[in-house]
Amino acid sequence: MAAKSNAYMGSTTSLKQIDKSEKWLDALSDPLTSLYTFNSSIALSDLNGDGDSKLIVADLGTGTYQMKLKVFRGTSLMSENTLLDLPTGVVTFHMDTTEPRVPAIAVASGAYIYIYKNLRPYFKFTLPTLEVNPSEFDLWTQARDDLIDHATLYDTLDLLRKDVGAHCLTTRTQHLLMCRTPEERQTFIDAHKYFIVKKRTVITCITTMKKNMAEEDAVSCLVLGTESCQVYVLDPEAFTLLMNLHLPSVPSILTVTGMFDVEYRMLIACRNGKIYTAKRGMEEGRLTAELSSQPVGLERREKSFLVGCMDDNVYCFSNHGKLLWRLRLGASLLCMTTMELASHAQKLLLVSLSNGEIRTYQDRQMVDSFQLEHAANALRFGRFGREENVLLIVDQAGGLQVKILRRRAKFEPMETASALTAGKELKLNIPKKTKLFVDQTMRERENSQSMHRIFQYNLYLLRLEAARQYVKSLQMSLTPVTTEEQPVRLAAQVLGLGPMFKIRVELQNTSALKIVQDLGIRVHADEKLYQVQRRFMHAPILIPGVTYVYDTLVEFVSDLGISDQVRVFITRGTQSRPILSAVINMPVAEVAVSA
Image (cartoon, rainbow, N blue to C red):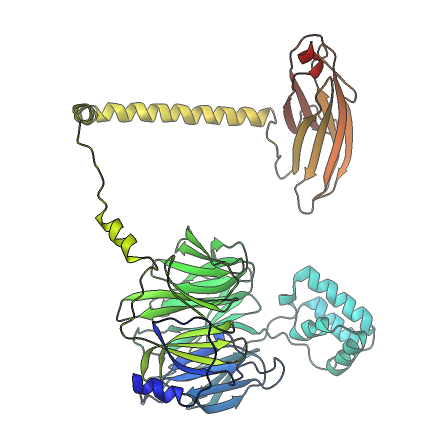
């Protein structure tokens, strides 16, 4: 391993690091590689079947030009192929069982998948066309026949985007709506209006799934997530669609376990901040978990999965969607990947933070950390060259770093040895069993059936009383929010010390689209104690999302130092039964206290 490290270090440029970890050997640190890529666009694979693993990188170039597929062997660039569009993902997979068993490279770019075998272009798969929106098709037809001008076409397509969503429109329309100036729009329309209108979606994420065998070199299927809220599974030999899964939102990250012909389980993170699960035989994704922000990374475990989000947290969910724990990172998460150590039977989590720190976690406990000069955009751990445990880092400056894990490195929680020893030697002082405890245990054993019956009887009485009170509150309209038919929220409060009080009533329409009209606010109080200035207030209309405030004065007119309740009722139209009500406990008036 030392010879391998020296070979790497001989042709590198040193990169200043703020903090180093004793668990890693610096094998390569080249800031002049000029790579612009992300986690989904790098892969490690033995492309020649000689036991020498290569690094495959889909370089985004400038974001518009110079997109290339690069293959590194050790520290040198082995192969380079030009890409026509921005790549969204790179995977390696075995297409067939022919010898020698060498994998192919699949690059997802736009609406196409480019297959490379033996580092040469082999096949191009095109996603199937989708049905074009009829309104969009008519607009482009009118523009071709010069029936509408460019401004009308742009404005109408923008309204259509707001109505049906951008993912339901063609890429031509999406490119037009991205044009900022009228000159750019006119040039784009003149160049494209005579072409046939076709809707072809684009690929957002890609991964692989074993077809019928679980071996490492077994034939694998390609799993694609598209902008049209669909997930496709492709046959690796004929490149035909084997399965089509529909989702409520656009998928951004995919992880798959199992085999397509036997049983599999997909875990899909979408742009709406939700995680969906799909199994064999399902045609639509099932909602598993809801996130508080957009997902950045998704890693699978045996009985759980980890999700890194833009709110600087890593969440752990069970396979059924139950939140198990949350980890606060303290900085923005850029990327994350799994670090699997077969020799130690460990699966660790590597995270890259915006402050340039690389952390290693075992569940919620941090076991290692080191600092980089530039934050890492992409991380990949696995076999590189002939070394088993290698970490490859692509930073924001375009540099490539390679770190080799020391063979004697152990990942343990970062705690002092004295604290661990003290915790192990601590013994609990368990008291002895008293005679009262033994007698109580015997009594519970002898009367277990009767005690259980009494407990169940009291539990049923509690449930009955809770149901009665709930029905009573519904009949008297004591709930603060009404049903979907009348989506109104009521809040009432009293202001002042007395004897003159102000009753403030706030009404809000909780619906998203429905408008509530013709509501009446009635204030009822004991006339012997209180005199209400406005017993009835009219609320003609409630717009969704707006809070309406109504005030009335209430004067305490009694000489007694007591207080009472004031009730507020919300009625609709000429109906006598209120749809909402609130009870205000009035404070004792200040004059009564001084008297």
